[in-house]
View (cartoon, one colour):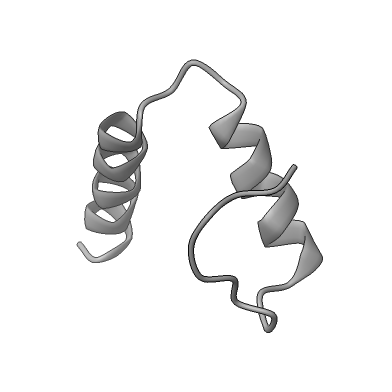
Length: 45
């Protein structure tokens, strides 16, 4: 899968695969961002 934009060649392969999986799912960027923020708030308490 090729995408436009910047590519971070230092990103571990596992993270690249996870991002590709999220991109191919029905989750929106906004929902994914909210999920990450919720998880971060749980760990920062």
